Image (tube, rainbow, N blue to C red; front, side):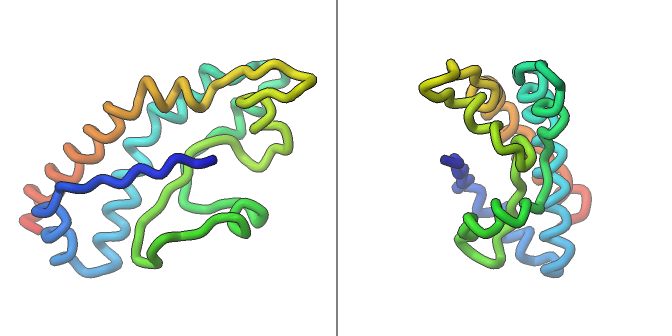
Length: 137
């Protein structure tokens, strides 16, 4: 199951972002999130088993889901900006992470998240602060 991270307590940043035109603020947020996610993508790729390389190569960060993933996803608010980090739509990606009765688990997503979430959140906070200060948003 996906873990949702909600950052609160950045009231001043939120107010300043709201002062920007809607399209600009969403583009700024999306770029900040994608940039902050790069180290997480790298850590997941580094930790993924390398049998064929397909799993590691499929790990990306982006704002689009496969058709199947999109059909299962519920966005909480249409005004939210979301990015998704993880393997592409490979039928076995979850089995590698969690294992099965036939295969031992080989976690690569959770360890990357656990070791990088603090830096990721700090990167988001720092980038948004810098952008808003520079642009007087």
